[in-house]
Length: 417
Image (cartoon, rainbow, N blue to C red):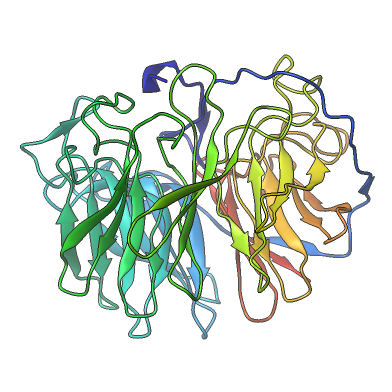
């Protein structure tokens, strides 16, 4: 599938786009689950971006034990290439780093990850190696580290070739401190998705050396990964691909410690289509996730479906926990899931909600598949159409970002139990 054919959605502001794929769906799922009314959770806008030097289009946030939140904006800052910021519990925002779009990178995507020393790690889609071009722009992205004082170190500059190019997801830290991630392009030169290549899974070791663990061929093995990776206690890596080629609707894959890929699930429309968000994993090896389309194919997007919440068991069975209809329970989840200790799943939808068809919801799905709407976005100070993954702190508070807000450049919000 050529990137230029993909419909686009604004990401938490007025500049950057979230790229979503086209859909070809077959069949109808008749399994529907009831949506209950909103619980007693409270959504509080924590910060509204004002654009320009303040930043535009936040990618989501992670927290530390003191309650500080850390994140990136795709655009804005001292230039137009994005920022890394810190938000204190009192609501004071500090910009830790301004990207220049040069060798330091530009346009960060995905949530940051934080190590025990307080260093922050992430990726940018462009910049880096300025002798390389991806999608007509200079540079194919970087992997970066930001110290607590705001000093940036570039760990890897992608070339768009065998090492990959254009990472659109954040990173995962392994037990030994290695970083794991994906690029949507580069890799196998025989596959064309993001100009050249269908993407890779990579590792960055503590010395900053990149190892390509897998290059997607764009066939049954999938291609074009845009979501973060998940690691289990045995060192296996799990992730998703959005799909490459006509009719391809995405996969869930597993890589073992030597880079052997196993396709765990291939989406076909009725069982979901095009996963973009983070996966969750329980102690029994069950995976949980969302797909942007599929499910009941009579709903949303002129018959493409409104998306699902799914469980993927180790034996390959895929119980569909919830089918979105685009009504009061929302639809079209771009974000993935976070899972609490009781097995409840939390996420957001970009459309739907009580009394509206535009602004989306935050929701909970129980282990038995009952959806409860936690908040219906109004497109006011709380923003609307949230597209980034949620995060959760030790107290069970949820954090995320939404479009719009008072200034139109994005909102950071908290949902309290």
